[in-house]
Every structure is written in structure tokens, then in C-alpha cells.
Image 1 (cartoon, rainbow, N blue to C red):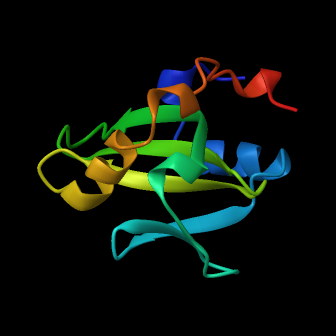
Image 2 (cartoon, one colour):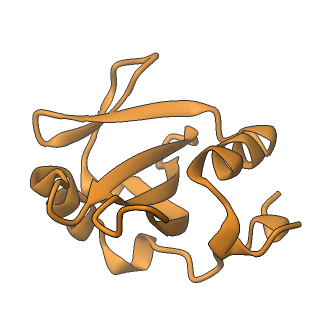
Length: 113
């Protein structure tokens, strides 16, 4: 497997989907919405299993974070957040509001079950 710095977001998305992280989330009206059920999650209902940061090779301002998410009701999926000068500040604040205890310290995809 390539080292993390050489991986693109889409490569990780594919790997996590194979591990069952198939739900899609979008940020809307101050909440993280699961696109199929349309349920709106608040920060305390979100658990971050892993996150991976990216910086564009050709443009250092092209930055993003891929969040691997589990919810309190056992939905598993991903959310790609742009950050930096062009990032969504409201979505970034939402992720800052997720309680620290809801963040895993294990970001190793090989250890996910």
C-alpha cells in the first residue's frame, strides 16, 4: 500500500467504502445530514473514526480533510471538508464542535473492522 501522503481522497473513499463506510453526508442548516435517510445529526451524535488531510500537489491552497464517520445510530460513512482560504467555515465549526471524546486516536485503515 502507498504511504498516506501519496494517496488521493478518492483512493481512501474507495478503501473505506469496501470496509462498510458507505453513507454519504452533507452539511446543511448547521447539521450533518445523511443523504438517504435525511436525518440531521448534531455534533454530539457524530463519532470520528479517522481523518486524513490533503494538500493539493499543484496548488497548496487546495486543501481538504476526509472524515470517516460513525453515528450514534450506527450509520457509517464519509464527509470531505475543504479547508483553507476556500473552505466552508460553518462546516469546519461543526466539526470543531464534535466532542473530543468522540474522536478516535486510531487513523489506521488497516485496523478498522
